[in-house]
Length: 427
Image (cartoon, rainbow, N blue to C red; front, side):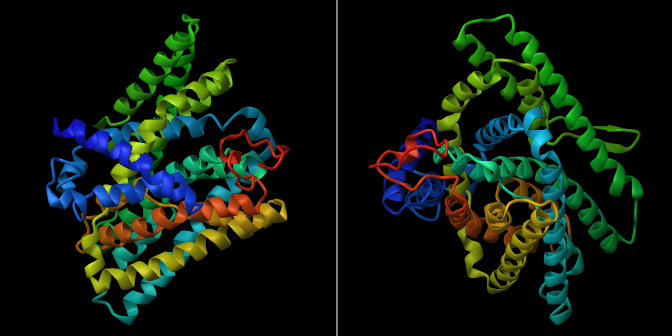
């Protein structure tokens, strides 16, 4: 009973908050996150009033399965952007920008935090500094996708953005695996090339292989059904099935093997959209079905933010340095790589701003980093940055897409119209 009431209140509360967000011209993502904060254990949830809200962070973590499924659908949707027609048009640009902006961000954050270590070694260790640098490369695909879908953004920058966000996950995984293993080696004095290079490569290869197989299998099964509702049901079942498979872990010859949920589901969507001739129509239906799941995902994300970190001056200081360095890295990394690949001036100027949101992937990396001697510092800094980026990032993404001319000026109906770039302004 308690869980059902909490889920219902979360969804309704998030939807009601979007009415206020519309008045303030803020994206729905921000509204869901704020609703989650209010329903969380530090506000309404802490009052223990008729099971409304979440009484503790443990209650929010107990609903993590919903978040995992939501991330699966987000990754599946982004994978559908990797159509061969688009890859031929801007695949080189997307790969170059996706890699360079992540590397530049990691380097800048590493420099800033290592400098902070030498100023005061008690603030942060070098191992935690380089780990945070790698975590900084991660961008949240969920917030970006929600803003794009809410405002029907469409155009060259939107297409490039979705491709870059997808590539960013693979690059971020590699950077984090390498940096974290170096950090562990610095603390233990033991260095393993197998762990440093082989394990992340195996994880990426296994994820792409599993996603390709599931995408092909989904297409083969869809051909046996002609009803739209049955095809939709098969698609939903397969995404949930893929999320479950991606949680598997095992060892081969002492080498740890696992899967990246985002990479597996993205590859499933990529293969499916490129071999299925009715994938676009089906994806529109999947998007409609997943709307409440994604809303719950962001409300739960807001409820899970630990506000106690705001009382720690050390975390706030490191967090501010981290946020400034990461923001500069994302902006100038995207700016320079866009200029290098001859993107339009509009994309070059605005793309970096859209890469600021950070959430689930970074939190997962931070959880792994708690194994370090001062890993709690890494986790709290990432929690603080997520709190800032998730509340501010979606609004900045929206402004950047508006400035690039890929979201119509808002009127009473414009946010609900299909934005083709040629539509008449709302009355």
